[in-house]
Image (cartoon, rainbow, N blue to C red; front, top):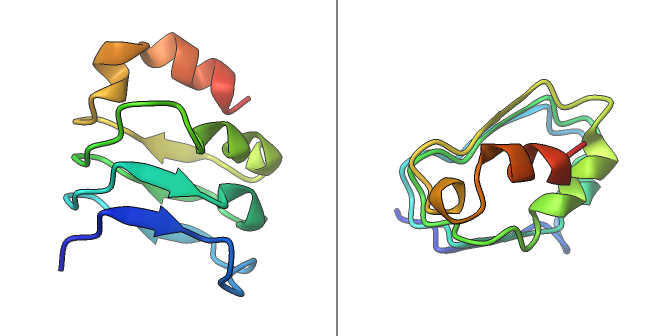
Length: 88
């Protein structure tokens, strides 16, 4: 299965602590602010090219310990420092 779009808007998922979605074809993520207990998010080796949706991770800043975006175009497009600013 290759996931292309990830939307957490309608899922009752507030208690998820770790989410590993590496190696799919995810280009967009939405609703990340609903993952209130999220401490680990691995989105490595996907197709995320813009910051759309990633800024929602700021709502999880107190619980988020690890975010992996290695292998996504966003790191080349806006850089690691800009991504870090988005989620803090």
